[in-house]
Figure 1: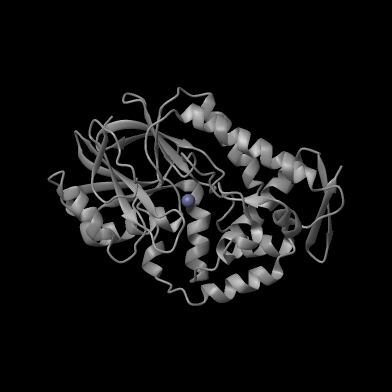
Figure 2: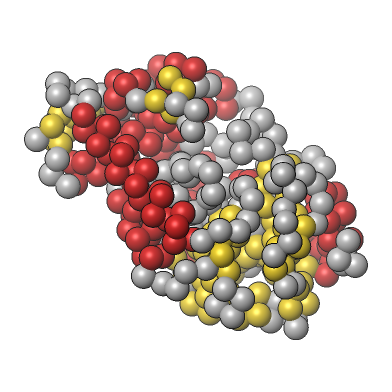
Length: 339
Ligand SMILES: [Zn+2]
């Protein structure tokens, strides 16, 4: 492994393993700052893991990165996308249009993609429903108004060439195992190169942050419960070196998974601790601190408040599922209290 630069978002083409290079692509107005696209060289040519966000300049940054490998965009045969979020997916259809690449996405994302296509806009409908269930109707309203200014591009959400099932896939001729890890999104896949000993973790396991839960379209089906199960399932597999979609590569997947499980245990305890009297999701979210910097809820921008309330609802639902809390409903609004 070569030493990464101090700022993981620094543009370029950074070698992370034999025939594997990390090309960070830009992201607009977002705390994550960049998304890692991995270029994989193998006996069958060149493939990418994750495509990136189709924002102005992103394709050019990718092109420059590939040029340092002596490759062009048209050399990319296949793009394996870990999950449906736009910072990972939307440059995929663009690569198909401009360079003829085939796009592969987990079949668990099909419902989400079809829902976005049917909607014809970027409103996060399910998250807005969760906000209303959590007592944050005014925040939902504010998000709706913010999102009406977003430009909708149907081409961003063209379906993939293949709905990928878990199992062996060929990354440029290198056999890797696609593993289903529902939670961050329903159809999230990670890609395990057993021979090389590394795992492309997408957003399922990130080095410094805890990925958002349940920010997607479609039915809300205990996303945190699935996420925690998917984390635990990685501990039952051989450990690997983490190649994440945001942040520096390297480090043990198992070690980071244990940290994330411990983080959610603490969050579940803190959430439970706020339920002495009946509380809405919004009230609980206000009682917790947010981001690694322990910021108060009120300091977050509307988008991140939405993520925070949805995450709180996900924790509350897990407490109910475990019998540690009860929910009562009036007019679609949930109030939670300890059992
Ligand atoms: Zn994501």
